[in-house]
Amino acid sequence: MLDLKSTIRDIADFPKKGIIFKDITPLLKSPTALTETAKALAEQAKGLKIRKIAAIESRGFIFGALLSERLGAGFVPIRKKGKLPAAVYQESYELEYGTDILEMHQDAIEKGEKVLIHDDVLATGGTAQAACRLVEKAGGEIVLVSFLIELSFLNGRDLLANYPVKSLIQY
Ligand code: AMP
Image 1 (spheres, rainbow, N blue to C red):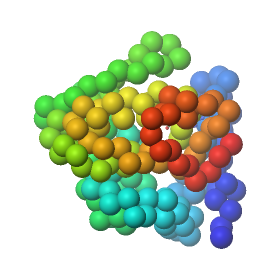
Image 2: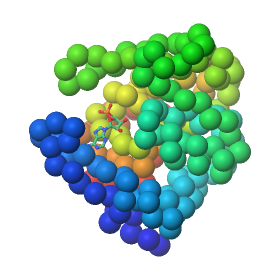
Image 3: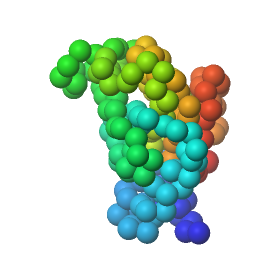
């Protein structure tokens, strides 16, 4: 098995001082790493009968879409405020300074549908928690919250304690 961790690059002080950014572009540009990652993420969701993948803008869209294809599920974009054209649900979440808003189309998920939420990185968990609230507003049942990378030292799982959480790579 390919060492996926070796394809993730640390960029210091991006997007601002003090942050070590996990850059997944070296992983994405490798055909082998890309395929292995999609396969491993899909493996984690095997047997869950997932109907929709709800993925978080924008890096979450990459493997979110590949997961949809592999699991035979529909794809639902969760986006920053003002990007989606039809009627939306909104949820705000805390940033280091201030708050931000995520939106999802109101007709994206049917009541009772099994949903997998995906993003590239779990840091403090605030973003994923807001995504969970959006899916629940629509009546979806969250069967897995999936990440490519988990920054374990930030304890993001604490905010997601009500849901099953899985990540492929931990720091
Ligand atoms: P959080 O809400 O703190 O869990 O932050 C998660 C969101 O911020 C995800 O959409 C990530 O893409 C992004 N993010 C947070 N920290 C990092 C990091 N160190 N490297 C790359 N992306 C990050």
